[in-house]
Image (cartoon, rainbow, N blue to C red):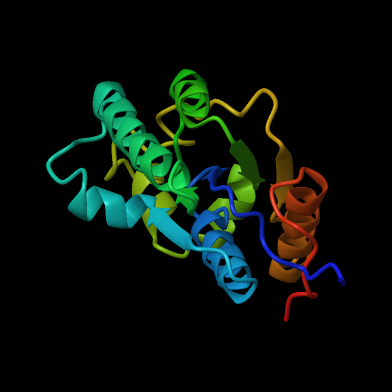
Length: 188
């Protein structure tokens, strides 16, 4: 019998971290579409959407940010242990809480979506960097609040130097090589 390219039935957590505007949500949606096309059950937990629903009422203190990330991590844990690919796209600025979420989740693939602040200021899709630089947003990650880069992510995507298609192709290849997915048809 021929080996049919089917996704691995075991769930895992795919965690995108990086500064605002780096491309986390875009890449999360693109990989989710690709994995669904390959037959994987997928749920995306986008940081902005989670803040409006699951974490409504939390502010942006370190404690509140940590609580938000722990909540996202716990939902990913519940989903992935039930065979779902749980994709989180959240700034998650603090390394210790990301590492805590990694330990909670077992099969965990961290993607650092890296883009220099200067390029993000230039892009400024949501106008947030402009407001932060003008002092209208306090505690903005990367400007007036720290972002702690991952020490050992499974993959670093440089969205200032790679196209979305290049980043997606590298991500899919890394997931296949890491045995998170079986090889599938090329993405479109």
